[in-house]
Length: 171
Image (cartoon, rainbow, N blue to C red; front, side, top):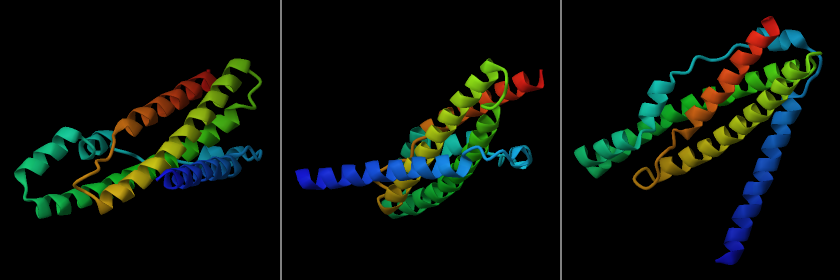
């Protein structure tokens, strides 16, 4: 059993390093401020996403539907949650680019906030990937695994940081 744990852990760590490198490479500052300015955030209804991932809602469905019907409905909910997480991931990339742009600001406070925004956005990107993996697993075993809505809180934190940064740069 130990070799399986070692292999799974190794693959997970390698995947995380690969993802971190890909995010860094894609959003590394290239001096193209127009790309940051023209990038748009995809609107995300966080309340609907949290409803899809609400454990109480899942328990309600589990008790009021037959097992086959619950699995069918849960898979539909998982597909929708996957779309929300993909949008959150895309937005995290845009916010990382905004933070990267702010890192070159002459004001040290703005530059530091930009650095923190980049770090949080990259963390959010990684959490999105891990959430997608979890959703894919839950899709195979809908009666055993549930999605998590904790990623919505992290997304809110990153968007608030970006909003504060935009206010600081405009001032």
